[in-house]
Amino acid sequence: MAKAAPEEQLRLLDLQALDSRLNQLQRQAAVVQNNPELAVLGGRVAAVDGELVRASTELADLERELTRAEDDVQAVVGRIERDEKRLNSGQGTSKDLTALQSEVASLTRRRSDLEDVELDIMERAEAARAAQAAVQERTDSVRRELKELEEARDVDLAQIAGQRSTVQAERNELAATIDAPLLAIYEKTLARRGVGAARLFHGTSEGSGMQLSPGDLAEILRAAPDDIVMCPDSGCILVRSPEWGN
Image (cartoon, rainbow, N blue to C red; front, top):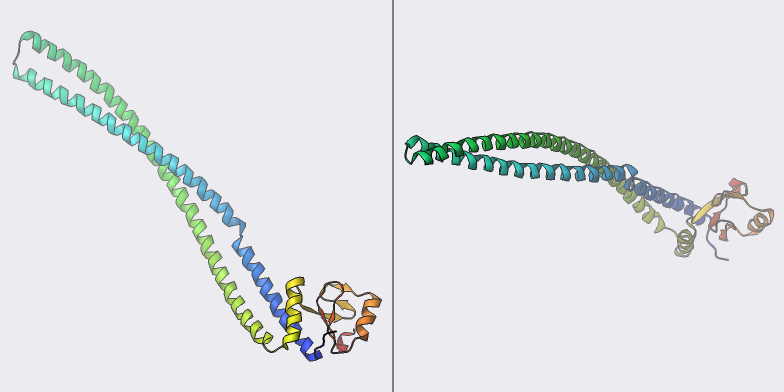
């Protein structure tokens, strides 16, 4: 059976407390990192981004349609102006001038129809512009929420990292003072079992939280004070002291 001075074994409890604190901080970091609100907001951002793309695409299509309508109106206006200029000059035969008058009248009606189309597109473009602005506002709002939550997460993670660094330094300092063979047993047990050492308190292993059987307890009580004994349930080192009624 491996041996270590009782006072050395007692110091394992301080080391275990630091390791437990490190594990606790690691779990806290995982909780902060995996905050479900981040996933929810990320989904909302993706949704409003999709809305914004659709709204922007619709607006762009209407603006191109409006540009074509404006060009059509201007083309007809140009033809009307040229025909009216020829009419006003009085040049040409009576038949030609009559034909020009008829064409101007036809173009005027065409201009009116095109302007109606242009006005309809302008109204739809204005509505699409307002809809796009509303979606943009929602997008900006959700992105601000996500950014604020991410910044809060980063602050929390930085604080936890700072605490871990402090505890790890304390742990390293303490571990360096423990006898190497005892530390090796502790480290191996910690890695395999998740708990390296625990008290035997009034017959209960604090590593497993269970009362030892009379047989196991009798065997442990027969061990020498410097014997390293293991918990039969959790497998960790059981640290004993007469003060704890073991």
